[in-house]
Amino acid sequence: MIEFRQVTKRYDSDHTALAQVNFLIHRGEMVFLTGHSGAGKSTLLKLIMVMERPTAGEVIVGGQRLNQLPRRQIPYLRRHIGVVFQNHQLLFDRTVFDNVAMPLEVMGVPHRDIGRRVRAALDKVGLLRKEKMNPMQLSGGEQQRVGIARAVVNKPPVLLADEPTGNLDPELSADIMNLFARFSQVGVTVLIASHDIALVKAMDRRVLTLDHGRLVTSAPVSSGASHGR
Ligand SMILES: Nc1ncnc2c1ncn2[C@@H]1O[C@H](COP(=O)(O)OP(=O)(O)OP(=O)(O)O)[C@@H](O)[C@H]1O
Image 1: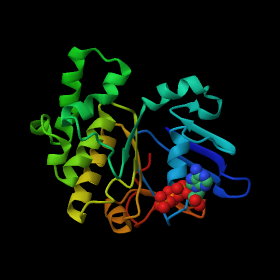
Image 2: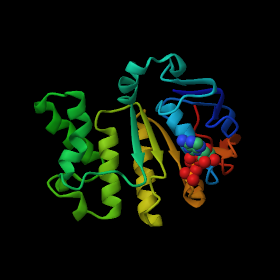
Image 3: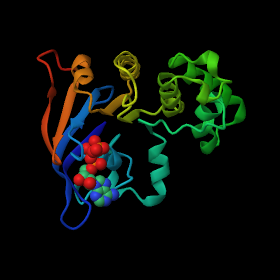
Image 4: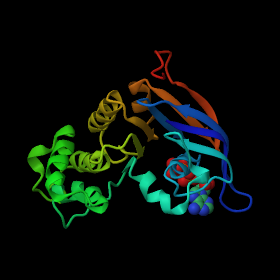
């Protein structure tokens, strides 16, 4: 579902953020991306979203070679990729419902379908009864769940998360990770960048580790079973 072939990304003429990175993530797999600050995690996610283009090599998402993707096709590709950020980027002058509905409105989904789809997404993250609230009235963990509901409301086959538990305590962080695991169980391909080594270990999934832009491991952190297919 997500494949990198010999991908190199240089920002300025000499600074190499990613160097000859190779990996393949299968449909429905949940994979973690770790590495020190500046290792290249966000860059790798940006290449999948085509917010950046590789200097060399090839990125393939859902069978589509992104190098050849014309600029005008980028918005359509992004509809197939849900993204969750650490600071969830919610609008505090709108209700929970309206925040989750935003991607559907941008896509021009008919009004009568929006309510049903927003409520289905809120149900998945356990917030069905809070749709009329303002995100400001919610806890940090609940706000992050709203961000996740918004990321999955149009049922993207790929879900990316950049430090999605950065502001949360360990218990809430584990809840959020288990939520991502449930999406992968129903076939969503999930890639999560995280600094939280203890949490990543506890989830016992395949881990891609970057070190100064190089992929140094692509294996489960523990000796437990690989969840790769
Ligand atoms: N737009 C940019 N222009 C120039 N250099 C950049 C740009 N974005 C990132 N870099 C550099 O590329 C390297 C990788 O950055 P990146 O943000 O991908 O790392 P990261 O692993 O996500 O770090 P963090 O965990 O701190 O967010 C860093 O040295 C960074 O300074």
